[in-house]
Image (cartoon, rainbow, N blue to C red; front, side, top):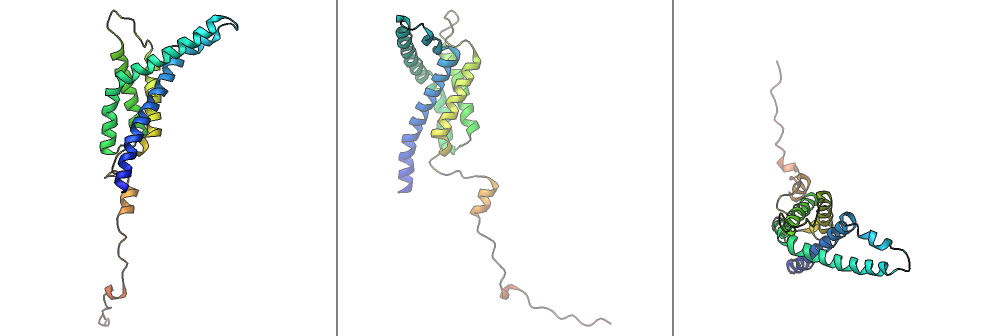
Length: 181
């Protein structure tokens, strides 16, 4: 029953962690590179403030959709690897986020004549790092259906049975030595 519960939990946590990672990456891109916060700096009472909020909502939805479409396949490779081999390292998931963000940004950019969607690779890397770390916090730290086969030396030592304690019957009888002459 424990295995069935863990399997069902993985089917819930992995998509939830992926969605949380995409939202974190999109937030970094929106706030960092595209300076979405500057849309709210319109003077009070003007119609530009309402339009800025509307544009921010539309752009945020579009970015999340693009990230879901183009980063999904690249990130899925790393996620499946971590689930299959129970890789629970935050560094692995952060690197998976960075690689999938960089490849996804290359896929989003249309071609040589199209304007780039992401101009500064710093924010792309930051978004991937944020996405990978958020995924690790939600689902990656408990990755894998089974527990890892190889663990740290302390974990392997804890799994070994303690050595048998010597009993009185195991001690050989003392031998008498002939007296020295």
